[in-house]
Length: 264
Ligand SMILES: [Zn+2]
Image 1 (cartoon, rainbow, N blue to C red):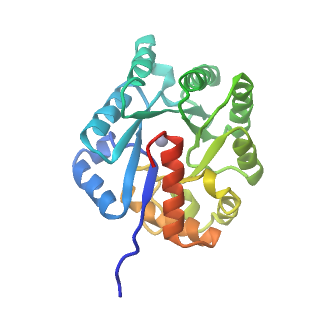
Image 2 (cartoon, protein in one colour):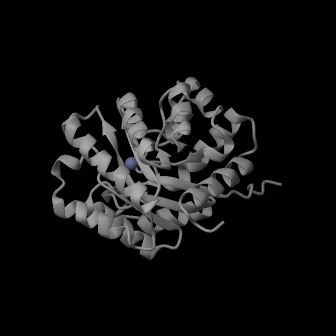
Image 3 (cartoon, helix red, strand yellow):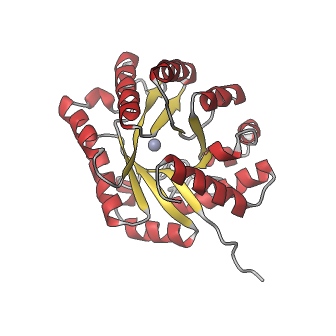
């Protein structure tokens, strides 16, 4: 009777193109499939990385690509890099724009430059009716202000990736049209507050992710993260919300597929 539960999971944020996967990328994707991860959205952080994400999505049927320039990397981005991002949107395996957003932690790129790139991503996502993937670090209020500005222009949808802010911030993001995605941080012992926030997210707006190779969930902290590890995050969220992991997996997979415009 130790048959594994039948799981359906969608990792909405991984960086499969990163060098940490160079040794065993195919095995990583196979392990994910074996763990029930039917799809992985691999997310670009620069023109080069976005091109690599698209190539992986061409190569593996379980992988889709998001293309964009990360707020920490946009200081180095050229006009040609931006043109590359725009051109990649025509590729059939590209289902989202990002990651973009604001990062007030690394201090590598002036805030004004980050805001200029974030605004560009938001406008382009709205023009193309694509979901936008948002990175936030120590800049939740600035991000909310820019999302409100975008929302005044028209409909907006996307993912608050690796969400770590408050319940009130989550409610505001939901009002603006965003989905809320939780990564390994929600499993950490000290994350009671974040688990409480997760339990308040409406079922149809909840997503899960690994942000691999970063941020391994408990009890795998300290190791390289990979999409198969999302099971621990799903289990933790299912417990916080008082539902079976199978149900949480099914619901978050359907949410991801609907948001990214994939057939259900
Ligand atoms: Zn990321």
